Amino acid sequence: MGPKSVVLAEVDRPRGLGGEVLARFHADDPSRLDEVGAVEIVGPGGAVIASRLEGWKRCGERVVLKLEGIDTVEAARGLAGSEIRVAPGPARARLPEGRYFAYEIEGLQVVARSGETLGVVTRLLRPAGQTLLVVRGAGGEFLVPMVASICVEIDVERGRIVVDPPEGLIELNAV
Image (cartoon, rainbow, N blue to C red; front, side, top):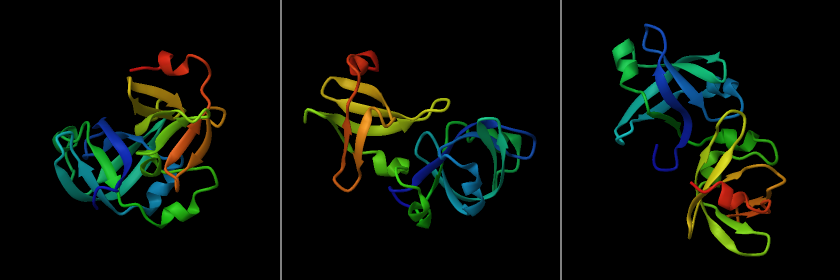
């Protein structure tokens, strides 16, 4: 699938006896899983396994995935910490205005309204109900909530996000 594949989910642990895995889903609507076929399983060490999504179900804030070729608890346990990735596809055209895939945001420059370059988005975090931008700047990494009141302009074509953070936010969220 290549380097521009999209993280669909991150595997937490096995679920059940048939090789299913409990995973954190990286999109807003789990029903999108109905359209997924081929996937890549990328292990924490970078090893890649080609597979297919055979089924899924919701489990609270997460999803339970059944992947082709993963049929035992032991095999599922071996996937803990892996990413389930898919090729970006025509789904992009169906996103509503103001919605983005993670791969479109990663790599964008983060610029303050004043014009000062603050850093580059290295990844997105999605803890319970929110999205945070992980930004690497001259002073290290910091977190920026991806909300309209702070991320006042997202311009994927120009490769930048203009932010208007409240005073002290960047220092407070340094990691």
